[in-house]
Image (tube, rainbow over all chains, first blue to last red; front, top):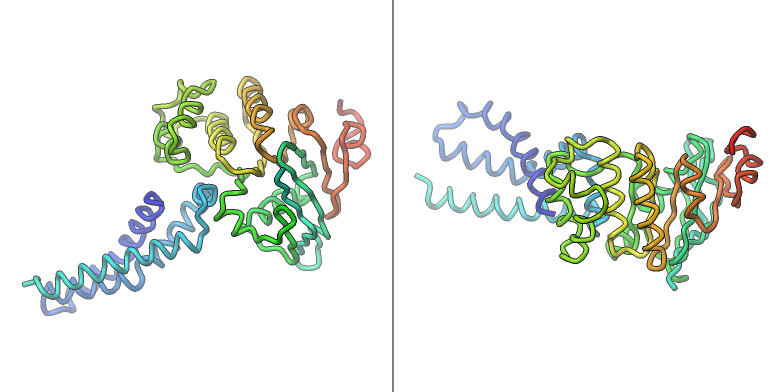
Length: 98
Length: 223
């Protein structure tokens, strides 16, 4: 499960990096830009990651099926984990960011 | 003795009935061979049973209780070896074995299986197709699942590895029900209890070479 989560999150981060970098100049502060990046990753990162995984590593789903994970369960765990991490980062940046 | 039964299974691609009212029984302690020409629907049948591909009709029973393929996956009752290689190529053999088998006893059985000590430090991507296939088959066969679907377990595998696989399948037979499909029909016939041929969307019993010839799977010159 950890391998799946790691791969999906890496694809998700890569997928979010391009729009994040392209909008860097539109924000007044680094903090506001970072908040937007975290929100973008929290909302779309996992979906992009799943798309990337399904395109490049589709066959590896069989590893997880054979270990008792359905595709839906894998998606749900990854999405929930990334959402929680995004909310935590949002709070950290919001309250402790300069 | 556990039993997995397909009461009715149908699959259409447009107007073409690939699988037409298929019925099949698989019991623990049984090895069933499934043959069919290319494109006859063997892999599709296995994918539907494993829940990877949708069916137009599917009535599946586990010990006479209705069950869905997703429940079979979640409960780890059914395992499947797909036709294509499925192991992560960046991982080393020594890391993949514990991923599938956390119990040290089972790990040891795979680590010390014939030919595995020679490849244990290699990455999956660096293995030959035959070595990777052999490893996949070993990982699957040692899972605790009661039923296994094996799609071409002998393809690209050298004779020595084949013999090792056949020995392991036979040694695990009492605990598992195994459905095997492979064009290396002699290897399948060596270990199977009964055999089926898929032609024109229907399953037919064919336990001998001559029956396979009659069903049009083998040419008359095959022996």
